[in-house]
Image (cartoon, rainbow, N blue to C red; front, top):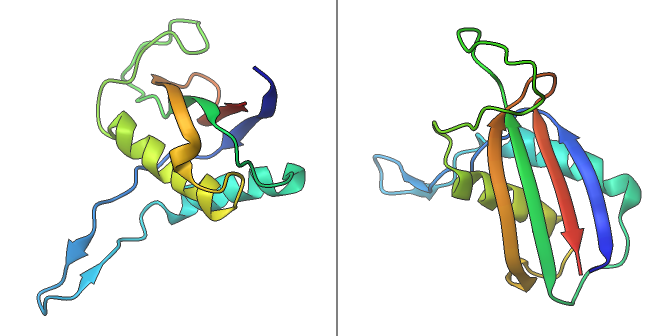
Length: 132
């Protein structure tokens, strides 16, 4: 495998929200993940290469804010995050941002994903690795 991108995106990871329906029947997409998607775009833009059109392997480790009540264990990421947001929704917002940037031609090119979410000790964000 060849590493195409290996980045850390700072910021609080946000899940992709489900479409909502207004009282008048209009369907809309909430913008709650927009700030997270902008962080991803800002991180990828300076090192953007040609659009990937081959199958890719994606690894993402999310680091979410640790509540003050959670004891500091001294490790960087030794406590798994088992609350909301759901891992699949975090991946969806992240992959959508990468697709919007045209890092890859479509997220259907991702044939294998390794993903996890942890309470961050010193940082929040996501480590993103894309390999071909």
